[in-house]
View 1 (cartoon, helix red, strand yellow):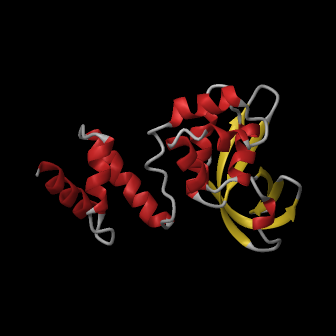
View 2 (cartoon, rainbow, N blue to C red):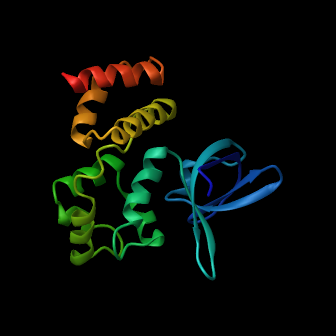
Length: 187
């Protein structure tokens, strides 16, 4: 499984890009290929889908887009090819807000999403999107996810962790952040 690939975009297609890395051109399906420029280097976060007759890469410019995509494809009846246009046509914050507020009309505006599937998305994802790292850098995102995983492993609840992480110094080491978060959680 790949997490990301760093390379040069050599070609833009209708719904994909070709990313060259060490002489290999990876065809990566993306929500919007026109956010990339040809002959520029990018770090593209990827998800590899392996089927009996197909091996595909789906790529995203940000880690938050990839995280939301992974949540969406876990919804019953929603596959990769249906989740990609949702990421392409809506803002991450807008999609998350629509799910949390149960805004079925907003979700039905996406291609191939009807009433039944929109309700399934809300049912499966409401309350499960709060840790998608929107608007923070990759390093901070990775640190925050690592801190969250440590605290979850210690048996704390998502809501408690979220409140503690807000008050932790983001610039300190992960060890310091864990100590600080534990102090806050034990109050």
